[in-house]
Image (cartoon, one colour):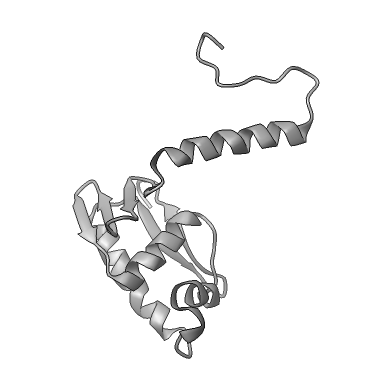
Length: 137
């Protein structure tokens, strides 16, 4: 522990205990700055609705912010258009997926302008996900 370890388990250990300790350490790490979400080289300040990357920062409009926050909290997870509409627009969501299709290009342009190494990817019949882009992709 004096050499820098945060925790330890002696053998044999239960897998449930290991997972519980990992979750506890993850909670502690994310609680340090609860107003900022980070994926790749992009940060979203939830207090000011600002998206920042290596080339600057952009203030996001209400729906853009809600959509980006949802993507960042679920990075790497494919989310169907229906889920995006329900979580961002709620029960008052307009008919059809057109409204989501309108906001995705806005966010993609802002990510490009910020020099982000993340992208919103579409998967046919599966939805959208925010993913870190490897160089050369």
